[in-house]
Length: 240
Ligand code: SF4
Image 1 (tube, protein in one colour):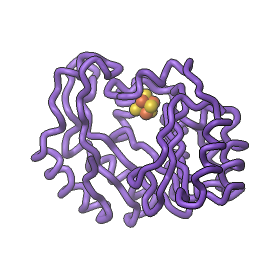
Image 2: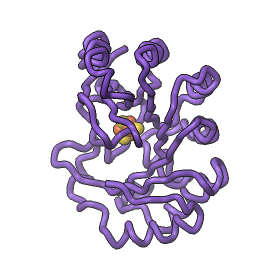
Image 3: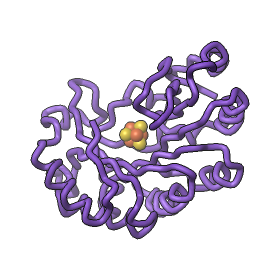
């Protein structure tokens, strides 16, 4: 499997685990606020052999692997890679944009993934604008329902500026985030774990450079969103 970058381990990405992190190259979305531009071309590949060797050397104290991206489900060798990781006795967390429900269904049926984190790209009517591409809406809805069936799972949304139909660019609003939360509650149940994340601009690092002029998500907006979203999803926290 292609790996565009890797982290030795951290305590943040995989709740309750000390996890190594594999970033896969390439993505089928073009979220304007995306920080992963260097990964999206899909050219760089450090290879999985070295990563698996590293896991062998740290398996006494690293107990999980987070596979993120880019979009990992685009990798044709994802399943064999996950099996190789599990074969070393390590738990697996997968981060996904929800574009590949068929693969999620197969991972679920084979019990290959312990924890899935799925991006919810705002309220459904804004998914194409938020993701920068059209045509994945049905797949994302199907994926959200599947994600809710994994042993552990979370949904998360970055409160980013959205490029709207009229060309205006503005942050997701409280009402829009409430609509996203209602979708999750209806799809995954009101006990679903949800993280509301702040947008952090990065100079010359975002897919749409116009967003680099925006500040971080205002703290008051995050607080107002949290209060409203928790009415639908009590297990919501701010992150980042
Ligand atoms: S933020 Fe969007 S474009 Fe960037 S990796 Fe995630 S899904 Fe792909």
